[in-house]
Length: 101
Image 1 (cartoon, rainbow, N blue to C red):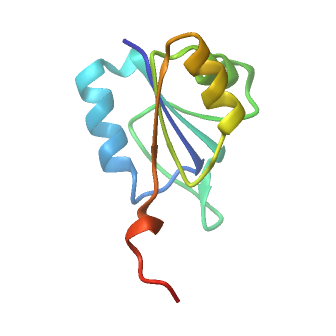
Image 2 (image 1 turned 45 degrees about the vertical axis):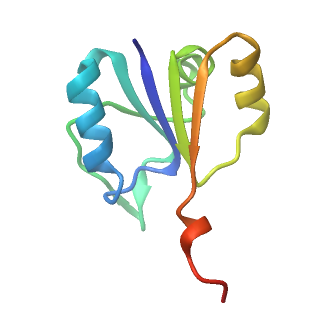
């Protein structure tokens, strides 16, 4: 099973989850895709493989991985294309639980 983790940037806050998923499915079957590979202007060090979203291989993973886990972005078109082919897309948002400002 191939799993892709797709966010707006590679975040040190999300790396523990990404690293745990990679260890469970196998590092060769996991990819962390970010629109940016930096967190606040600094490259994030990680043991998981990361690619920018505009990379051809990243695009293939986003379209075809068995499971896509995403948050911080709302790639509705991508999720619809994946759903039509029976691929799973999981969306998260911590914003639902934050108080209204």
